[in-house]
Amino acid sequence: MLGDSLSAEYGLPRDIGWVNLLRDRLAKEHLDYSVANSSISGDTTSGGRARLTAVLARLKPAVVVVELGANDALRGVPLTTTETNLRAIVDAS
Image 1 (tube, rainbow, N blue to C red):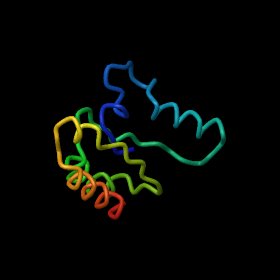
Image 2 (cartoon, one colour):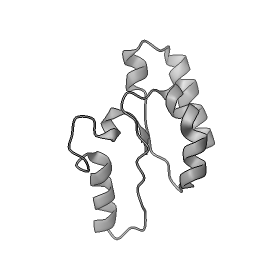
Image 3 (cartoon, rainbow, N blue to C red):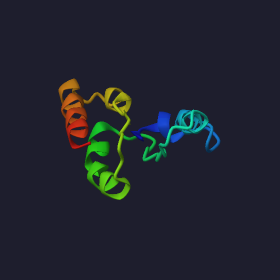
Image 4 (cartoon, rainbow, N blue to C red):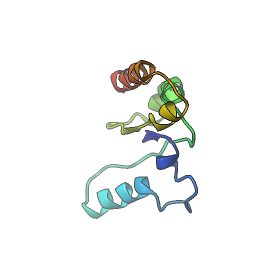
């Protein structure tokens, strides 16, 4: 998971956010996936893009879920910049 405060459980007690719910559902369904949460509250697509190489090298994920972009909009980042960053994240993943 590469995300912002929605995935980093900002303002919530640990391990009750949606990423943990996904982890629990996968386990309940006996699907052989582990879930690593590399989300940072306040992160933007440029922040996620900048740290993605290290995250991929460290975790070597089979699947990457990206939940970024809301903070870009809140900060007035041009939509073309957000799109460019998201495309680079998807391509690298």
